[in-house]
Image 1: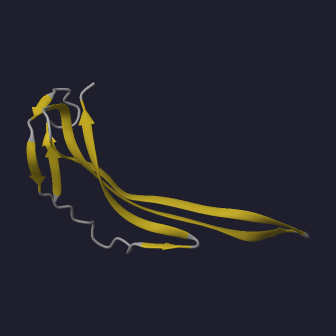
Image 2: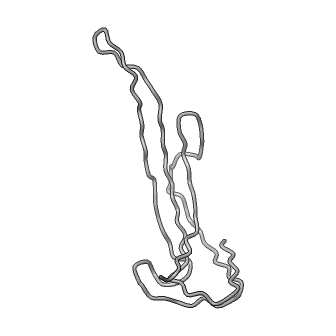
Image 3: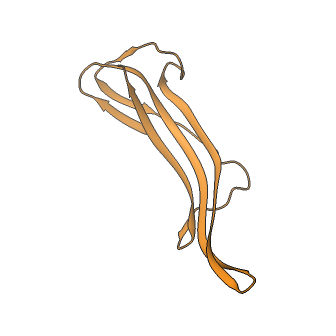
Length: 108
């Protein structure tokens, strides 16, 4: 749930919620080529989802301004993780994260 308090009228384009899920791993290994060895860094990044939803205002891409009047606003929302995604974790060799962030888009 988003809870938002506006003290004076504001001109905005919208309030959006960004949902992002990704995994990143990095570790070092050694490879041999004949009688030589070298250190190799292995990396992988996977984005499971990257979605922006409109909580208030016009849809993304519509450049129409709206006035949000003073008051308290509550915007409930739900986001369902895709089936069979890996659990969240953070460790020495990487991480797996699911995040939600609020984007308040002001008019220019």
